[in-house]
Picture (cartoon, rainbow over the protein chains, first blue to last red):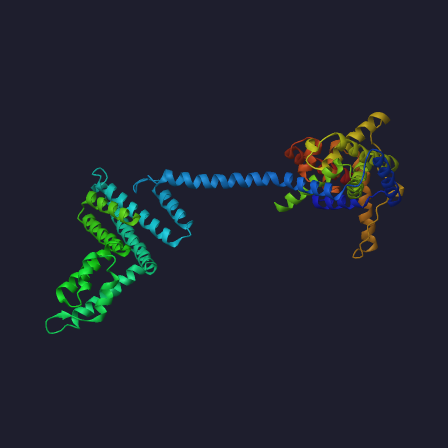
Length: 291
Length: 192
């Protein structure tokens, strides 16, 4: 006889039960006995309290466990990021830093903020690569393979920074009406320079007046130009240039253009193996993006 | 996990109701457990009348225990019932001065299994086998018999058995293995 057969036979013994008559009579007997010892029917409020407290008792352990798990997860993610952020590209913990940065990026919901942070991370990584390569103890023939890999990573990071900057630019352009207005002025001024001049080269085009009037409040120089109905071409160009200068100073897209330019310079310096200066340029990029 | 949580919640709820002197909760517990407790007692004592009396006593003792104690010493209400049942049986042995050594063979308590797919001959064989096991159970050592009843007849979990018997789960597993082997030996000896 196998164990299974034996167990099946044992389970058949479940059929043994007390007499139903005894069961009922004993039930009544017990009920009367417990009633004598104070048994009663509970009120709805008492039942509600019992249900609530039982639920709280049953769920307290899993709730504490879940709470502890979430707490560990949050503290872990915060402190691990801080601990790994100082890892250099030639460290074994560098991969942890990359993962932690990616995790942080993925937890950001605002696309603009995410792009800004991505630019900062990629720039810092490129900066760290430059710093590592600037170290004469590391940048030797023996580490040729690693140096080549780091060079490749640097280029990847630079292209990543550029991509994220390009994501940032169009948004800012649409958000900022001022930039659009400046573009319109620029276009109008070009048209004005080509047409509407009289024989003396004096600008009489109405559009010019309107456009310059826009900037009257912002630029005192223009007041002179607008008060005189007839302007010569040179003064018009001066006005246009001053308008452009004043608007491009506060133009965020220009800061991105600057960032692109500085990045390109950093790349060139890196290719010339001037790692310290490349690193300085990358620092500038971070500052520009922060602004 | 959620089923465990629900089980735990239900157990706490019934216990709190009993603690609050709820008649309905007591009757519910009685209806749910009376068959299992009766079977446990019957297989340990071997007499139907004594099993009836002791079962009734066990429920009353459990009620009184809950009113004066907490459930901290038992993981579930079922485990508490079995613990009280064990102690009541020990007290009964002590008072009556005898232990179960004779057969459980009871003419008034024959087991009838009706299975239409079996031929009359097969049915007779199966009944004979069952009667054989029933007859051999009292010959097992007390602790072997106890774990067999709890695990294979009353379907208690290893955790509950370990809580009731005060043994570790590993020990309970070993005990179950040994008791099954011992019972098989007894059954096979008789067949030969």
